[in-house]
Amino acid sequence: MKAHLILLSLIAMVMHPKLQSQTFVPNYDESKVPQYTLPNPLVFENGALVMDVSEWEPRRAEIIGLFGSEMYGITPLWTGGVHGQIVYENTNALGGAATMREVKLTLKYQRRELSFYVLFHIPNNRKPAPLFLGYNFFGNHTTTPDTNVRITTAWVANSPEDGSLNHEATAKGRNTRAARWPYEEIISRGYAVATIYYGEIDPDFDDGFHNGVHQLLGTRRDSTSWASVAAWAFGLSRALDYIETIDEINTDRVAVIGHSRLGKAALWAGALDERFAMVISNNSGCGGAALSRRQFGETVKRINTNFPHWFASNFKKYNDQEHLLPVDQHQLLALIAPRPLYVASAEDDRWADPKGEFLASLEASKVYRFMGLTGLPVTSMPAINRPVISGTIGYHIRPGRHEIALYDWQQYMNFADWHFR
Image (cartoon, rainbow, N blue to C red; front, side, top):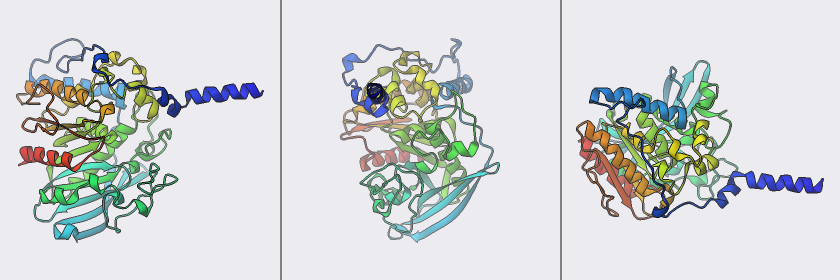
């Protein structure tokens, strides 16, 4: 009996995802990248060529369908309502330069409701202002020192830096992530910015999809059902529903932005919702801007093992079988066309495969050029700190680690200046 229990314990240890991840050795050697052929975004699944721009829309719908069924899951049609309530406002924020406003948004669907909070900073000297919309990782209160901004009551990851214990946020986390949200500089450049704690849309753990917007819509689950990345993308669109009612915002100039997993969500949101006028991916890596077929850094199997709730269960079919994917991430980027797209990498963030992010941007440019646009105006990966912003696709790689830094924000605002003014 004792031997049997020991055997079961050993099996459990081997099967545990965290322990499995200890044995995973990522490939960081370009010579070991497998040979691959990328699906052509300008060829229909039946082999017919997309002959003119009028045929892009049906091909675009075909690509969205493939990403939906095989990767992110199929997002249900939204037929509910969005109600906004201002819970806090300071018209003299940032030394009088901005209006800070926290809004409680309530999604109503049939007899169910879900609420989340959007924190706005809107310049007082430019209205209507273009706006950057994106998620934060630990709560709106972590982006500002203002003690009037509420501490989220949603599930949060444990983080000593942010004072979150037992998956609960605390006051210790206030202002700890402000570096990721340079409000003063954004406002000084004439842009508004809005952020949401992503866990209020869908908690970032494998909960069986019984919380957040999955519970709200009550969808019956199968292998193509939407998962967390799609849920976070959905939340961005619902926030945009409300933003479109704000007179102080130029709703034709809303850029969706995301870092890391939230960069994946921003890309999928931008692909599904063409109301977003610009899409920005910061270090989004596997399942975001990086080509899956390269198997460099994080792989499909590794991301499905560590984060089984991020993608539709169908995506697991491609563990160690990336070459069988009917799509790759250059096609996701191409879905943003003809709108401006910016992809950024960090030199030390090899896990997110900077070269794979650049190559996907380069391949997506074929669709932009097909539409008569520049796309990415270079053919070789630029040097560190040499941003490329003069095309419809922008790109930079900076020194440092997996992070969203002030330098990144400065390039995004330069890119927005180029396209929005």
